[in-house]
Length: 480
Ligand code: UDP
Image (cartoon, rainbow, N blue to C red; front, side):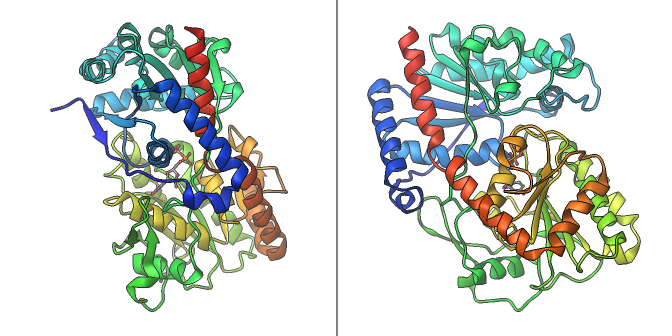
């Protein structure tokens, strides 16, 4: 079996983006792409991560790779094949870099052996594929261990870390100590926030690149109201007459039509909400740091205030079988289900636990898109967050977002202006208060949503990523 799988990504052109991003931004992208093409000549830009679907990194790579290939840059995407022990260690590392204990397991010699054993064959394959002078972007802790072999082979290894914590802690130090030997000679590091750059990653070699979203992807394209409803009825998320297939259609990355036909797997004890029921929605992986159970607690407090405006809660995430590098998913999901079952029936009837189909990543994206469009309020009550893509996605859809005041979310939302921040995400009352305020004041909520969309347009859209990478490659090349 191969230690690396290639993800095939279709070619996308910038034409359709022109209307949304404007001439100036497109021209800047074209100039950056031309410079990158000249600099790379026949060299390849590789991206390596550990899952083709589920989570923010896979989401960004889908779009970015499509556009860069459309711009004539030879970019490719490889996924490291891992087993359960490997992903347990990398998930432990993920928690550690976020400053959390995770499952509290050690990160010692035995874990290092598991980590290196999986990456050894992957490094061999990668070194056979990449040529000296190629650029390899290694994403997150799962791939950091590939760097030494690449550097030895004369390949430019860049480590792109999407997670981090603002303040060092014993947990984060443990994670950095584990990764330090692999990161020592990396050409450059990329982080999402400057406060995430740890001591082991020399500041002079770090660049900050803020994640952005693709407004034309199946996840973020504008959908007519009837399509939003059509998709939600088709998947079983809301009640209503099944529409004709056209009302479930979306555009795939390559411009061809797609259609939502699968159903979501929904755990509910009452009826499906109808189209007028206000929905409070969180879409996340089933990860303890996303705190789905805490969202349920906050919603419970809202209902207890007696002023919930008949809102219902939707907690949606990928079907737990499907995200390769997230072994905790099933346990977290089961924990949420257990707590949900323990709720009093009238409350439980208003909470819907949704496992979204992942067989077709773009169909999954279209369902998330419809759900975010339809939500009265989108929540991201993370306990840690590198940069919440779901926050940007919902803001782009003009939704009022309630999110935790931490990590990258602090760069995304201006409190009370382009969203609402909760300062103590572990306190369910704070979520309840924020939800109630938005449900009480619909026009205020709408105004927040409008400003949120403009903030995304200005800061978090489109091709900024590519322009930043072009500059980075140039810088690295000039350092030679
Ligand atoms: N997501 C998805 N389907 C799901 C759950 C999540 O497509 O069932 C997407 C979500 O829309 C977002 C990404 O996964 O694009 C999550 O990125 P984020 O930065 O919010 O968190 P991460 O999972 O990277 O920690």
